[in-house]
Amino acid sequence: MPTDPHELLEPYRRKRDFGRTPEPSGSASSQAPGPDDGLPRFVVQRHRARRLHYDFRLEIDGVLASWAVPKGPTLDPDVRRLAVHVEDHPMEYELFEGVIPAGEYGGGDVIVWDRGTWRPHDTDDPAAAVRDGELHLDLFGERLRGRFALIRTGRGESSDKEQWLLLHKHDSHAVSGWDAEDHPTSVVTGRTNDEVKAAPDRVWHSDLPAAEASVPTGGPVVPGPTEEELAALADLGRQGTWQVHGRSLKVTNLDKVLFPARDGEEPVTKRELLAYAARIAPVLLPYLRGRALNLHRFPDGAGRKGFWHKEVPGHAPDWIGRWHNPDADPDETQFYVVVDEPATLVWVAGFGALEWHPWTSPTEAPDRPSYALFDIDPGEHTSWDEVVELARLHRTAFEHLGVRAYPKLTGRRGIQVWVPIARGPGFDETREWVERVSRTIAAVRPELVSWKWQKRERRGLARLDYTQNAVNKTLVAPYSPRAAAGAPVSAPITWDELDDGNLRPDRFTIRTILDRIEERGDLFRGVLAPDQTLPVLR
Image (cartoon, rainbow, N blue to C red; front, side):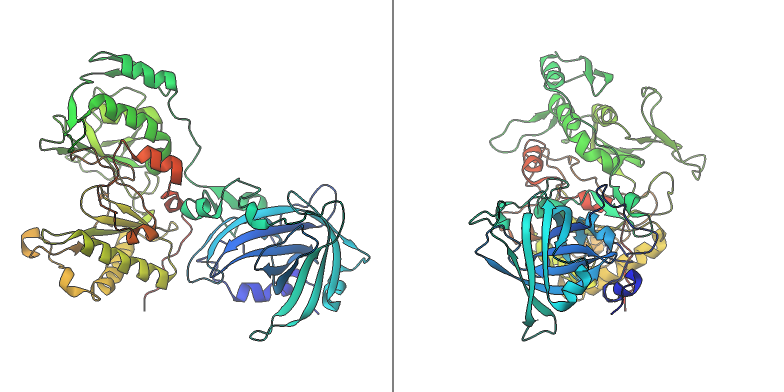
């Protein structure tokens, strides 16, 4: 039997494409440091793949010996749990929490359900005990504690994988009726599987040492405005100075209507828009930070025609972030606004920008996109049901390709999908990939789609617009308002919500989206993990 960790991990590596899955590769340079007490480690992960199960892993011979436990471990000594012996995993898997892409082995969301140390009982050679089919052990975890036993019972009828029983002994840690499903959160982040699936806030880099490999997405978290700051805005007259997010802002025309009313509602004023900008800024900042921003301004409100504004105006405060485009011609925009702090977004809203459109590439690499963009742009005769049908076809395509993709409502009539990608391909390559996928999708329902550039030539049909994948082409930011009655926003959704009969493209507004975020979290956060390589299309 092999004992070298590299050899033990060969089955694990054969099953995975580390260019697509964020799981650790188990390279020799990325081993995590051991605990101070010198005891071997264990981890249990709640894993929603094709079926929910718990992965029970013990450090043995430099790897994590692993069993899949369909109903989860228990502290109830009168309950026996089936445990299927699976391939060994690398040690740094102890720290892994995230989303394995659909189409990859074990595709699904993973949380660290429990972790700690363990000690073998009545043996000095746990590897030999596993080979012999019976291991008794003491666990010292945050949830699992006490004496356990793993006992091999044979092999499954439809699989050559070994079948084991996992059980808890009668001791002081035993709890009758104890069920793992009553404890559905991560012991590391406190999040549920749903929350990790919706917004993985860290990405694993297999080429880094384990202590550095789990990297947060989106930059540092910033606090929202205080109740006192919001109250101060409400108490101002038509104009004044507002202290918010550590900055002093001159605000004017606060009672001016910027968005017409929807039926049964009041119109939205500039005061309400500024309050929304201050409150949404901590959520939205990761999507704007380090990116040039194109402003769609409507100084006279959404009821009048707007225009694009890109150059930082001369009256902008000195603290407003800005980026000089070194490739701009003399007659082109030289300095763009960069929203690197929350107060800048409030200033942008006060400047009459009702819609916020960041570049899809960062200022440090403007020719390297962060996302591949899919835009379902409905025509005059395209119904909402047809837009949803096209979006569902996108969902199927991404599942088939094993690509992680994030849909959002435009706040107008359409749906957009952002696919996060690792830095590397330029816009030409990304645009070509998106076009090929889009044409394959459209071939399923060709009667719904036109590829004509001019709207008047499309006969009222939808366009799957791949041309937005270009330098200085933008799609509206998540959570940005849209210049329409009621101040709808471009709201991220889950793929499952495409099956909700009440879904509408302008369903969420600046008055309702914050409650949705409070309840569901930021459903778009996964696009900030630049960990995907676009698969080769055949």
